[in-house]
Length: 193
Image 1: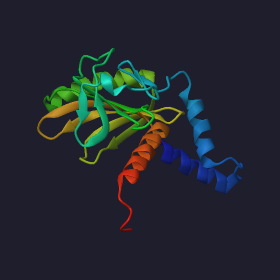
Image 2 (image 1 turned 90 degrees about the vertical axis):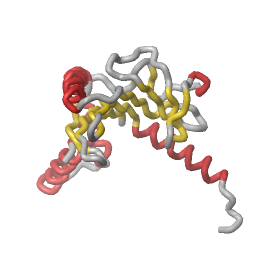
Image 3 (image 1 turned 120 degrees about the vertical axis):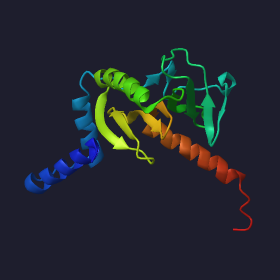
């Protein structure tokens, strides 16, 4: 179970025993996150790019395969372990909703060593939300903030591994998906429906 699920379970049990306030569960979760956020930073910027900022595709070094709104960029503030950086931007408004970075391929041990270093840096900086498994059963660590920002960090691969970090904002990701859907709907011939 993740941190949010644990909180909701505890809150639900408390409601059954002692009665609930009238605030919606999302607001109670946000209030709890704000309390626990404390002095931890909000997840807003990575490698010189700010989530929610405009990304000019003219500054891109290319596009990302299988991601129509993904653009490779050269970071103004790189991190030594990463070699590939890209953003996901909303296709109409141009706002950045996700920032991704990957290392070159390496052994599993080398990846885990570098991962430990980054974990200790992020643990001091952001609110830790636990360890999870991705679709390929690779572990990743997740950090969150009270404004729907998140950061995922892990090693991915089977024989050769890559260190990766994904920054995102759930509200901005929804905007990106809505804009992409609108473009795809506009481009379809609806006469046969």
